Amino acid sequence: MSKKVNIVRSLKALRKETAKWRYKKRSIALVPTMGALHDGHLSLVRLARKKADRVVVSIFVNPSQFAPHEDLARYPRDEAGDVAKLAAVGADLVWAPSVAEMYPDGFSTAVQPGSAARDLEGAFRPQHFGGVATVCCKLFSQVTPDIAVFGQKDYQQLCVLNQMVRDLNLPLKLIGAPTKREPDGLAMSSRNAYLTSEERQIAPKLHATIAALAEDVRAGADIAARVAAAKRSLLAAGFGKVDYVEVRDAETLAPVETGGQGARRVLVAAWLGKTRLIDNVAA
Ligand code: PAF
Image: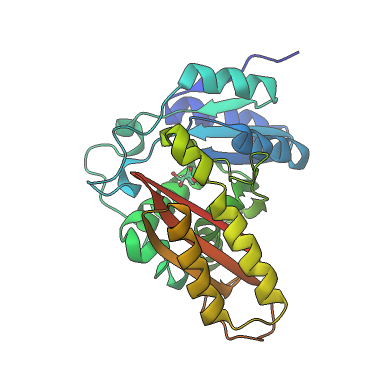
């Protein structure tokens, strides 16, 4: 039976709720989202549910992480649907501030993310991680969670935020949850809703290509040659443009050499028509 979820839109009301929990020594988990929730998000909420006494899910489409030419205006929104899904997985509270509540008149402070933000997504979306880091820093101080759960689907985001938490001594722990995939391998994403049926057929090739690349890298293949081949096969499959295919250190995201030691991650961003998809796997 799903319980009713409390939707809170003012910081004052949020603080009142979290103060009650803190007084009773309840631990708090935060799952930050931009709404349009799919099973991937719900798996984060289920994980949060296991790790803490109370679960807050924030729904806020953060304008400052979108460049002017990006999809802020058409980003999918369905608050009623989101709240029904969250009730079914046992979230306690939805924090859904307006843009004016999050960024009141006169707001002018920002977090400048560190080295993990510099390239990959950072090269193609220069203001993106500044916007993400700033809003997450605010969400952390608004909700005061003990933990926050993020999907590994946005792997670089998780690295950037881990670096921020470490560097600024923020008093919480981040948990990265495995990417939820459709049966054909496509990583769940709110942006999958933009794909035409023809593009949807091609989309799983993104995961298949990086999974094969990761396997070859693990077996000691030459990284540069395999990366070039992966780019060619994505273009041949019907992707219009490949922004990057990279094999990186799994923690720092620094470039790695063929045959090097340590955990590695394969990361990709590519365009299918007007939709930009990203994905990553361990290598
Ligand atoms: O991953 C997302 O949905 C967003 O970048 C986040 C973390 C909610 C910040 O707006």
